[in-house]
Length: 496
Ligand code: G3H
Image: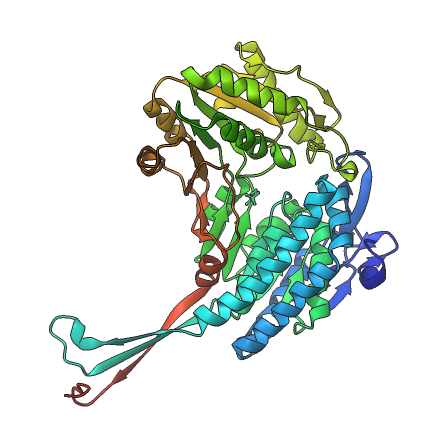
């Protein structure tokens, strides 16, 4: 159970502690932040409201720990990561329990998130050993005007302190997708989990603690964004920020100093369905892509752009599948569970009401109880409706009927977002041409958008983000190239 057994030291009275210098501690503020269970809408957990002074101390110890860690052999870093991966999987149930209570993730999906995270950590350890063990060797005579008297050796060095800020929808998986690459590359990590999801993240951090990482190398600070948010992202001790979330990321990118940024800020993923598509396959993916975790995924299908000639058939098939979806609490593994906060539910409702007023066709009746919103497919959505452009981050999916492929591509490219998109067609040549025309970080052919498998590159254009993620890209992003040049007194040619 959460906060008991192996996790008992995380909890004192009814408040979860924060993690600093290898120990679980109470904040000197004496204050806490409540986490509201999206299903019951009552307080579920409390975490420490840390202070700026505590953030300063974390940065100091993190810097010291990083210097020693950078001198730790790569194979030893990998060994500890493998140990953490095993512990994560071993403790998947209590961590998943937190995800169910804090973010209303269906119980089975919550377990999957933790297991996926363990696999990510192991893969990262292996990939790190491979790619960080290699460098480059260059010789000067390949550049005009040079003899072969300079030999350049390059290697990858850590950046220092990586500030990791994951979002509420994957507080474990999108935390380890930042922590593991940072650590294998020789960095230290300061984690600021989202408030909803903080307790799951603290349990995950405890697995790293139990694995035996040196003290100070990983810290986890909880608290109010208004008190420590900007203070963390603008802290002079931070050498890299990896952020996943909403448009707060845009504000962070404007305030952060001269540090590398890795950002993923959401999407409005378009699903283009052509006349020759396998409509059963497309319908299954529209439902999976649009409604899994109640649409609260940055890679969810957020607008269906279907050719008019097959639109009726598609809508009928999607409607039939939606009718079979279960709606209710995450503990019962329902397909649709309450959205994360009341304000999120209100925002979704605002988009639905706008579409209603402007004449969209409701394929189901709109129904809401508290944070629980029944799945809703809206047909005949037009570009003047907010739903055509905004991210509901909920179980509401707009269908726009198109008469040309160009119209679909134009809609996709006119969005502020450019994360992923997908195309359904049996013609691979057409699929490739449309993929090239779509201005998004990834295009999926004949499947719904998705980040995974976790070693695939993952990136967004425009407001969807900065840089590229995925295990290999994250490791590279969290390092810098260092060169050492050997200058010979006279040119030397091998076998010359
Ligand atoms: O919400 C953003 C996540 O990166 C999406 O990940 O495609 O595995 O659901 P996913």
